[in-house]
Length: 610
Image (cartoon, rainbow, N blue to C red; front, top):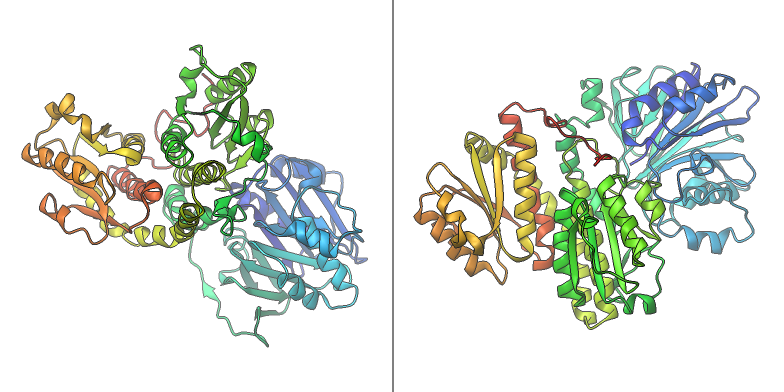
């Protein structure tokens, strides 16, 4: 989710690139870099750790004079947050430089097969691309070198490439990571989104996956991998404001982040699925299969939304791997005397990796001898540094205070770990293989739910006038009811709570009346009939019902006409799909009530105090 900006034209590139980086900083802010082709055709680069301000400070003492260049603001995925890992990266001879968004899955293979004698200066997958293109560029044109490299790599990329041997052009390419080309008079500008482009031109071409382009100040020639000749691609005229462009045209960051989920779910699992083994492999886990088999207990530490993901994780580990698992609230864990030892595996789960209560509880777990691993979004965060290993969820920067895409990616990583541990124990290949096949279908199914946004918006309008709501779920979906209630209250300020539906008779039924609506997860799984019975009780007490149900279920319509349908999937993956309607319901309810969606009152994105 890093930010790229590149410029070729007749103006000083440094100023344009730095302005572009500032407009892209929301996409990544742990390091930044800029490279310009000087008048004597040298590639001059400046990089820094930290935000764009830190890069600007370094540029005060040196001016990069030239009219063509590339720049990058980083959200780390491969390699820690250091200057050597910041983009742009050079090839071995320093004649080719590039910036890259995305993940190259087979970079280790490319290193071994093509670059065995090369020395690398960073820990990134990106540097491998620079070396590979430069190697081919010794005999081929820059265009041919990029084409050849693109044919070898697996993964995702938004790529800008520059060469001292052909200093009047920039090569760009896209697969899975967005790139836009702004067409100006005697100048062209490339960026990850329209934000840096709009001050210079409103004519924009969006590259599609599999497309690449050769760009000079006067021309933009676009090609598609696997086909011959230039393709004709029309520019669009963009009328967005700067803020709208940053949000990709969505009204709020949260809505954009909800719609990011099909892509980031793929990012979470990319390179980690092992279909031939019916299993998963987690880079950075730092534990052998033999060590993992000796684990007797798992503890999941988290706060807030991350804790609800951990509650789902408890179901997953116990069902798939038959390992006793506890989901613990970070702010409570350390005030007990938790029973853990060196056969306990502790996962600290946090979007920011800086949640203080979770961090302090992680330290307590280490003090007691547990094996500690992190599941976080921010590379180089404190939880990541202090854990003995772990996994990044690859959700990209999440700017809305209320978490959406980070939550779903936490679910994905916990699912992969449960599959991994399950296959080490008694789970069959057939079961593991079925889960992996269903995981691969999830992005498309999430898209099907997002296509119902207007229907969910209408439901939100109908329900936003109530003062109280009750969310119900059973089994693996009970934590999703908790998350749905959590989202509604933090965004719309409507009082809501969540219950396991089977517990309604033990007190919550007293709340039911025509002014107290119930939002229920009634998807078709092994608890479906019991859930229907629970909803019969709700209907008898005349509470309005809004149900999330499996596509094609007509029976639910006997209880309520207010139904949001989700595609069918296997039960352990239902939480990933069932949470999407709740995110949209909370979002549109907040909009209806004119709340500050991205920054709800009294809340902060990262809780770093107790």
